[in-house]
Length: 153
Image 1 (cartoon, helix red, strand yellow):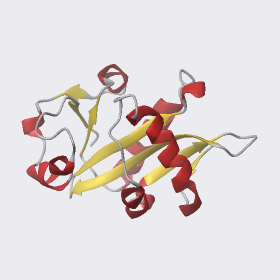
Image 2 (cartoon, rainbow, N blue to C red; image 1 turned 90 degrees about the vertical axis):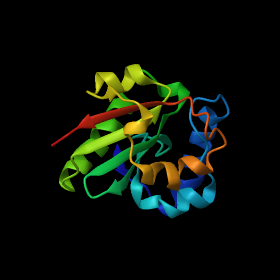
Image 3 (cartoon, rainbow, N blue to C red; image 1 turned 60 degrees about the vertical axis):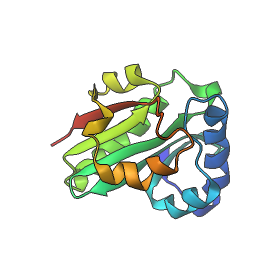
Protein backbone atom coordinates (compact mmCIF):
# COMPACT_ATOMS: atom_id res chain seq x y z
CA UNK A 1 0.00 0.00 0.00
CA UNK A 2 1.26 3.49 -0.85
CA UNK A 3 0.42 6.40 1.44
CA UNK A 4 1.77 9.76 2.51
CA UNK A 5 4.50 9.48 5.14
CA UNK A 6 3.64 10.22 8.75
CA UNK A 7 5.84 11.64 11.46
CA UNK A 8 6.37 8.25 13.10
CA UNK A 9 7.68 6.88 9.76
CA UNK A 10 10.83 9.01 9.78
CA UNK A 11 13.01 6.51 11.67
CA UNK A 12 12.07 3.73 9.26
CA UNK A 13 12.70 6.00 6.25
CA UNK A 14 16.08 6.99 7.70
CA UNK A 15 17.02 3.32 8.22
CA UNK A 16 15.95 2.41 4.69
CA UNK A 17 17.96 5.26 3.15
CA UNK A 18 20.99 4.30 5.26
CA UNK A 19 21.07 0.85 3.66
CA UNK A 20 21.81 2.41 0.29
CA UNK A 21 23.85 5.41 1.45
CA UNK A 22 26.25 3.09 3.31
CA UNK A 23 26.94 1.40 -0.04
CA UNK A 24 27.39 4.73 -1.83
CA UNK A 25 24.27 4.16 -3.93
CA UNK A 26 22.23 7.02 -2.48
CA UNK A 27 23.20 10.22 -0.75
CA UNK A 28 22.49 10.21 2.99
CA UNK A 29 19.78 12.40 4.46
CA UNK A 30 20.04 13.47 8.12
CA UNK A 31 17.05 13.15 10.43
CA UNK A 32 16.64 16.93 10.48
CA UNK A 33 16.15 17.08 6.69
CA UNK A 34 13.74 14.14 6.76
CA UNK A 35 11.61 15.88 9.36
CA UNK A 36 11.83 19.15 7.40
CA UNK A 37 10.59 17.39 4.26
CA UNK A 38 8.11 14.91 5.75
CA UNK A 39 5.29 16.18 3.52
CA UNK A 40 7.38 15.40 0.43
CA UNK A 41 7.50 11.68 1.20
CA UNK A 42 5.34 8.73 0.32
CA UNK A 43 5.93 5.23 1.65
CA UNK A 44 5.11 1.72 0.52
CA UNK A 45 4.03 -0.50 3.37
CA UNK A 46 3.65 -4.24 3.67
CA UNK A 47 -0.07 -5.09 3.61
CA UNK A 48 0.28 -7.60 6.41
CA UNK A 49 2.79 -6.09 8.83
CA UNK A 50 2.53 -2.39 8.01
CA UNK A 51 6.35 -2.30 7.78
CA UNK A 52 7.77 0.38 5.50
CA UNK A 53 9.56 -1.33 2.64
CA UNK A 54 9.90 1.60 0.23
CA UNK A 55 9.97 5.38 0.14
CA UNK A 56 10.24 8.25 -2.30
CA UNK A 57 9.95 12.01 -2.16
CA UNK A 58 8.96 14.75 -4.54
CA UNK A 59 10.55 18.09 -3.79
CA UNK A 60 9.44 21.24 -5.57
CA UNK A 61 12.27 23.38 -6.90
CA UNK A 62 10.59 26.06 -8.94
CA UNK A 63 7.15 26.88 -10.32
CA UNK A 64 7.40 24.24 -13.03
CA UNK A 65 10.16 21.94 -11.78
CA UNK A 66 10.38 19.22 -9.15
CA UNK A 67 12.88 16.56 -8.14
CA UNK A 68 12.45 12.89 -7.29
CA UNK A 69 14.60 12.18 -4.25
CA UNK A 70 15.28 9.40 -1.78
CA UNK A 71 13.75 6.58 -3.82
CA UNK A 72 14.59 3.36 -1.99
CA UNK A 73 13.15 -0.13 -1.63
CA UNK A 74 14.28 -2.58 1.03
CA UNK A 75 16.72 -5.10 -0.52
CA UNK A 76 14.42 -8.01 0.42
CA UNK A 77 11.72 -6.51 -1.83
CA UNK A 78 13.58 -5.35 -4.96
CA UNK A 79 12.43 -6.51 -8.38
CA UNK A 80 8.78 -6.42 -7.28
CA UNK A 81 8.02 -3.16 -9.13
CA UNK A 82 7.71 -1.24 -5.84
CA UNK A 83 10.26 1.38 -6.94
CA UNK A 84 8.43 1.86 -10.22
CA UNK A 85 5.11 2.26 -8.40
CA UNK A 86 6.61 4.81 -6.00
CA UNK A 87 8.15 6.81 -8.86
CA UNK A 88 4.93 6.73 -10.89
CA UNK A 89 2.99 7.91 -7.84
CA UNK A 90 5.16 10.98 -7.32
CA UNK A 91 5.12 11.73 -11.06
CA UNK A 92 1.32 11.66 -10.97
CA UNK A 93 1.41 13.97 -7.95
CA UNK A 94 3.68 16.36 -9.85
CA UNK A 95 1.06 16.58 -12.60
CA UNK A 96 -1.60 17.64 -10.10
CA UNK A 97 0.61 20.63 -9.25
CA UNK A 98 1.09 21.54 -12.93
CA UNK A 99 4.78 20.67 -12.79
CA UNK A 100 6.18 20.51 -16.32
CA UNK A 101 9.51 18.77 -15.66
CA UNK A 102 10.81 16.37 -13.04
CA UNK A 103 14.48 15.64 -12.62
CA UNK A 104 16.56 13.32 -10.51
CA UNK A 105 20.19 12.75 -9.66
CA UNK A 106 20.81 9.03 -9.63
CA UNK A 107 23.23 6.13 -9.70
CA UNK A 108 20.54 4.00 -11.41
CA UNK A 109 19.98 5.59 -14.83
CA UNK A 110 18.55 2.41 -16.38
CA UNK A 111 15.69 2.45 -13.87
CA UNK A 112 14.76 6.03 -14.71
CA UNK A 113 15.17 5.55 -18.46
CA UNK A 114 12.44 2.91 -18.28
CA UNK A 115 10.21 5.61 -16.76
CA UNK A 116 10.86 7.99 -19.65
CA UNK A 117 13.68 10.04 -18.17
CA UNK A 118 16.59 11.18 -20.35
CA UNK A 119 20.13 11.91 -19.27
CA UNK A 120 21.15 15.56 -19.24
CA UNK A 121 24.27 17.44 -18.34
CA UNK A 122 24.17 18.68 -14.75
CA UNK A 123 24.72 22.21 -16.04
CA UNK A 124 21.14 22.06 -17.37
CA UNK A 125 19.82 21.82 -13.81
CA UNK A 126 18.78 25.07 -12.19
CA UNK A 127 21.36 26.99 -10.16
CA UNK A 128 18.92 26.99 -7.26
CA UNK A 129 19.53 23.24 -6.98
CA UNK A 130 23.29 23.69 -6.90
CA UNK A 131 23.21 26.40 -4.25
CA UNK A 132 20.56 24.86 -2.03
CA UNK A 133 21.47 21.16 -1.88
CA UNK A 134 24.52 20.28 -3.92
CA UNK A 135 26.83 22.76 -2.24
CA UNK A 136 26.19 21.02 1.09
CA UNK A 137 26.92 17.57 -0.31
CA UNK A 138 30.12 15.81 0.72
CA UNK A 139 30.79 15.03 -2.95
CA UNK A 140 30.53 18.64 -4.14
CA UNK A 141 32.00 19.70 -6.57
CA UNK A 142 32.94 16.19 -7.72
CA UNK A 143 29.42 14.84 -8.14
CA UNK A 144 29.27 11.39 -9.70
CA UNK A 145 25.50 11.12 -9.87
CA UNK A 146 23.76 11.13 -13.26
CA UNK A 147 21.30 13.93 -13.96
CA UNK A 148 18.08 12.86 -15.66
CA UNK A 149 14.93 14.76 -16.57
CA UNK A 150 11.42 13.99 -17.78
CA UNK A 151 8.87 16.36 -19.28
CA UNK A 152 5.45 15.47 -17.92
CA UNK A 153 3.20 18.20 -19.30
